[in-house]
Length: 273
Length: 273
Image (spheres, chains in turn red, brown):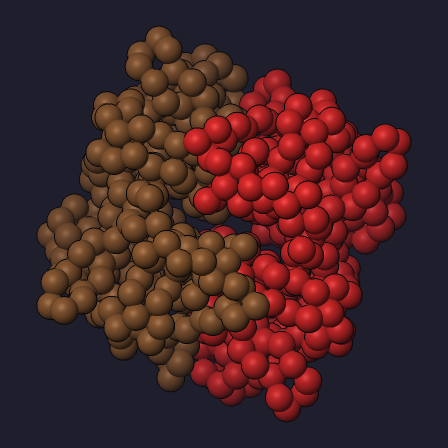
């Protein structure tokens, strides 16, 4: 699978762009926070992808979403990126989230997406760009695993606490399911979209309670009026090497102390070599 | 310079965070659309970086911004990423460049200067240095602007008065260097009072007029009528191989036809091997 491809020959193709300047519509299940059916994203891939750009946007209703990206080869469907986050909680048609995913997709695969949402039967749209190599001609990893368990179609609530400018740690997962060599994070507004201007600094850490080591130091995020939620919520992917069964946590501080306003929800993913 | 590092040994460090106030390093612009003075971002780097993440936000006003990232080694300052974009036309914009594959030698003093559409405006910046890129990849030598900023934003690309139909705009007549990865940044095209929901699909192309070839096909983005500008504004990096002296253009369509509302500004950057 790990084939290096000179990017002098980089190819790209789009899957999912639709008439009416739109993407492919994905409909959530009729039950809130439950995955719906898979929807194919365009036709099958015409060459091996090693780098994917996944764009999620155009929510028809304000809501939180998590979605799985899967491939079907020879009649078998595999999830290659699980529980990716898309948050358009402030308003419909407002948020667009863009993921760069170093993943291998074999030629001839049918890409498909299914989603769960905090509101039953609402829709989002997806467009995917496939590349024949990553930067530096790098190959893609095998899959992207969620390092969190979604709750009400969002990440893990991280509350910096009632003391400003002071970090508070929250466990995101007790045990990662696989070794990961690249890390992706998403920070959403945790259900609060009526907040004053807010700034956060947060660390992503690995290790047991009391012996955490910082992987990502003091990432910076904020929001202001009138949008009331972070505008850009995807962080990474970042190089790392996290063994399987690692504990992951987020250590976060905020400049405001208002309950609710100060909290975010954090989702993490790891790329499996 | 091209040293591959195992990402089993990936290291990170933060430069520019101000934990005492949950803030980052403040940079002030000069006269309108004129770069101000360089401001150092934290202490000198303690190891070689092969990738950099930049987080920014907390503007003093709504504005368009372009900024230069420079390093100072042995008393000489070099710009390693020029005219990066920060679109903050509606209060509350925060964004980042995740993992720019750029090499920074150990012992470098990193600094930033910015130009704003508003005189003496400020924005806050911090960065995280990574000892390797994805797959242990080294960084490229620098990142060059493939456009000429105008009023501190990118090149306005107008899809025209016919909905859902592409119109091409030249972004640069001639690239200054060969580049092997491409970044795309978008902005509101100076319009922060849109009447309705906008969606865009756009191609980035290379080649002379009439013989353009698509490099990035149908990137999808949009915005609603709460913040009226796209929320996530940076795309890439995209692998490519674009020769020196190449013409680049953007071929864009929009679902709305209202003059002004339908326009995006596009900035392109390339990584030099």
